[in-house]
Each structure stands twice: as structure tokens, then as C-alpha cells.
Amino acid sequence: MSRLLVIAPQPFFTARGTPLSVYYRTLVMAEQGVEIDLLTYGIGEDVEIPGVRIVRIPRLPFTDSVPIGPSWSKAVLDIPMMLWTVGLLLRHRYDVVHAHEEAVFWCQALKPVFRFRMIYDMHSSLPQQLENFRYTTSPLLLGAFRTLERRALASANVVVTICRELHDHTQALGVAPERHLLIENSIFDDVRLRGPGNRDAVAVQSCRACFGPDCRVIVYAGTFEAYQGIELLVNAFSRVVARLPQARLLLAGGAEDQVARIRAMADALGLGATCRLVGHVPKLVASGYMRTADVLVSPRLHGTNTPLKIYEQLASGRPLVATRIRSHTQVLDDSTGFLVEPEQESLAAGLIEALTDPAGAERRVRSASVLYEREYSRSSYEGKIRQLLEMIA
Image 1 (tube, rainbow, N blue to C red):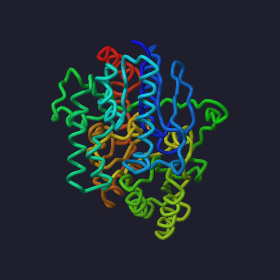
Image 2: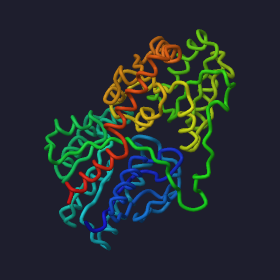
Image 3: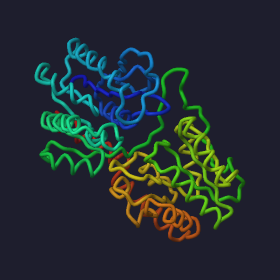
Image 4: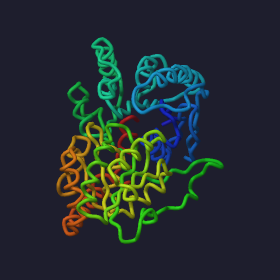
């Protein structure tokens, strides 16, 4: 295969909103010997991936922060992304274009002109995103995106999905099994940044440093978007600490305004020093918190895509409490985690059980480790990437 063009219409690489799935796809393909040009937004820091050249569109005013989900800022940024795609295709010969998310919409129009083969890396159903983020209720706009999605799936040589729900969605829309590959976002290597911003020197921290040595620490690490259920978790934790005074909650992540809002909520509940919010921290620090926790938690309220952090939690050696929703149950069951309903009493009961039932916690940790090694480990991921390259070749 000659040089491959990856088009990632996302910030790359930034503290918030970083497309880790794009990074890991690109990293492992490059390790397989593929030379890659990666086209992305002007926002972020470059990363060290041998064999990969990062090409950025200009940094535009008022677009320093791109929110998760559909937004007008993404729509504005995608205009120069389209122009740069054409420019790269005019200057270079690419056998394959690897289009992530909405990039497939303009790549499918360019495909017959430049005669490349196309991978559609489908991280979500964009019509479903518009509904889930309550971006629009317009039947006309939703219908247009459904049409675009069907055409994109039909034109792709290979469709890659990231979870079972999306796999089933594409099958229902007529994607033949021989054109489809499920590759979960299941690896979590440390990211190596290029230049003075390199974070390799960041010290791994223990969550024990935030509390006394005799505490039992529950850790959540991730975004603070509404669907993540942070308010649910804080309310549930107030019940946990009433029952187990040695319990502590560490929340890592969130923008400044989100952290301030949750801090005020925790204070209003009288949680004081039992609930610590550390804001956004480097990935190495967040991983250190997770590895030294007594219990991990994912209180997500709704959704169908499995978050990348679930795979790291599976491999962490720590018991996991998670809500019983499709995002989680595609990977987890009652043998690998403490599954609870997405409401306060159930979540509190699950956290208390995970903290007070060491035998049950250990059984689940062992099962989770076996599952991860069998289905989602790096060697498994590498095998799926090799299969993808064989399919597109």
C-alpha cells in the first residue's frame, strides 16, 4: 500500500476533546509499516508517531475550543478541512483514504474523482448524535443526515465500527459482513507528544495522596458532560459516606465551570473534604488515580457507544461499578462489574457492595482481566488492524 491519508475532523492532540481512537488507529497502522498523512484541525499539539506526517488546517479565530458532539464551530472548521483534503489529493497519490466521522461525507464525493479506496471509521451515527445532543429536532435535517449516512456506508470499501450497537446499526442499513470490521477503542498506551510539551515526565500520582491512608477511595476519571452522570454520582456518594464514613470520592476531569458547579453541589450536600475534584489532569495522572483506587465508577446515564475508559477500567485490576445501560452492557456483565440502575439508590448500593464485599470484588476483577486479555488487549487490537489493512488492500 502506498501512503495512506487519514482525515480526522477533530482537535488533535488537546487536553479536552482529544480523539484517542484516531491516535491509536494511526499509531498501530504505522507500526504495521504504513506511511500516513494525517489531516486534522489546527488546534492541539503534534505527537510522535514514526511514519506519520501531521498536516493541519490553519488555526481559525474563535475555534480554540471545540465542544463534544455537533456544533457550529465544527461545521466552520470542516470547510477548510474539505479544501485541504482536495489539495492533498491533488498533490499526492493515495491508494486509501481513512475517513473518520463526518469526513466521509466529502470523501465519498471525491472518491470517484481521485479513485481511492475508502475506509469509513464510524465512531457514532451522526443522525443519532444530532438527536442525543438535542442539536435539532428538525425532521428535514435529520432525514438529510440519515440519507448522507446511508450513502456513506454504501460507498465505503470497508466500514469500521467501535461497538456492537454501531455494528448492528450498519448491518440493518445493509452493510455486508465482508465490508465491515468491529474494532473497539480498547487500547490505552501513553501518548508521546512532540517537542517541549512532551508529557512523558509527568509523575504518576496515587489517589491516596488526596486523602488519608485509611480511606476507601472511589475514582471517576473522564469528562463532565451531562450524560456522564456526575450529579447522579455525587448524590449517590452522599448516601455511601453516610453508611461508610471512611469512603472518599475523587473526581478527575471537567472544564473549570463544570468543576465549580459540581464543587458547589458537593458542598451543599455537606460532603466537604470527603469529595475531591482535581479538574483536568494529564492522562498519566488519571491512570495513576485509577490504578490506586479501591473502586472505579462509570455513572453514565445514557448512550450506546462504549467509552474508551471502560477498557482501561477492565484492565486496571480494580472493581468497577457501572450503570446498566447499553454503553456498558455491550462489554460488561454482572460477572465483570457491579452493574446498577442509573439512579441514586441503586448506584449507592453498588458502590457500598463493591467497597464491603472483597470476595465479590475480586471475582469480578479476575473475570474482567480475563475478558480484556481475550477480547480487547493490544495484541487483539493489532490483529484487527492487520485484518483491516488486508481487507482494504
